[in-house]
Image (cartoon, rainbow, N blue to C red; front, side):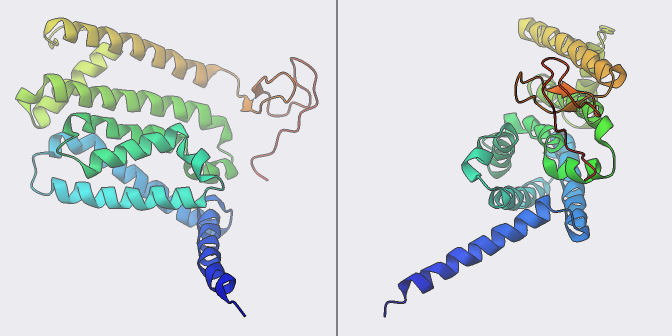
Amino acid sequence: MDDRPATESRPRSSAGALRARLRRLYHGRSAGSEWFQYAVMVVDLLIVAFFVASPILRERPLFLWIDYSIAALLGLDITARALASRDIPRWLRQPTSIVDTFILLTLLFPLWLANLGFLRVLRLWSLSRSGTFWRPLLRRGYAPWREVVQSVINLITFLFVVTGFIYTFFFREGSGLAGYIDALYFTVTSMTTTGYGDILLPGPWGKLTSVVIMLAGVTLFIRLGQAVFRPYKVWHPCPRCRLQRHDPDAVHCKACGYMLKIPDPND
C-alpha cells in the first residue's frame, strides 16, 4: 500500500492550520483576537514613530540595528498577513501591501535606498486602511469617525513624507534636529500657504516643490473639512447603480430605489 498521499497531506494540513490560526488572530472577534489586533496596532504606531524620527537618527550608531530589527518585524507581519488572507495573489496586489513591501525593501537596503527612506512614513497611510486597525474600532462604535480619522492621517502622512523629502534633498547641510525642524517648519508654512519667506528652497526645483506642497496642502485641508462637517455616510456600493455612499439607516438606494442590505458593523 502506497502511503505517499498520507505523508504529503501532513504539511498541507499543518500549513492550513497555521493559516486558519493567523486568520483568527488578524480577523477574529474573540477577546484573544482583539488583544492581538490591539498589540499589532501599537507596534505599528511605534514603527511609524521611528520612521518619522529616522532622518535625524540616521547618523546614530544604533540606527542600523534598529533598522534591521524593524525590517525583521515588518517582514514577519507581512508574511503573517499574507498567510491570513484567503487569496494571497489578490492581497499582494492591494495598494497597502505594495506600500508595505516597498517599505520593507528600504529597511533591508538602508544604504542603497537612503534617499527614499522618507517614504517609510507611508506605513501610517497603509495602517489607516488596514482592517486590523479598524475592525476592533468599528465594533466599538467608531464607524462615524472613520472618514475623519483617515483624512487626518492623510494630512499627517503627507506632512511628514514631504518633510522627509525636503530634509533629504534640500536641508542635509544642516543635518540633525535643527535641519529637520527647518524642513518641518517650511512644510507647514507652505501647506497652510502662510509663506513667511524666512526659509526658501533654492533654485527652480525648490520653487516647483513649494507649489506642489501648497496645492496638495490646500486640497488635504479641504478634504478634512468635508469629512468633519459633511453628514455621516456609510460605504456600501449599490448592486444596481453602484452608488457607494448611503445613510446608515437607508433601506433603499436614493439613486435607483434598489433595496439595500447594509450590514451593521456592531454585529
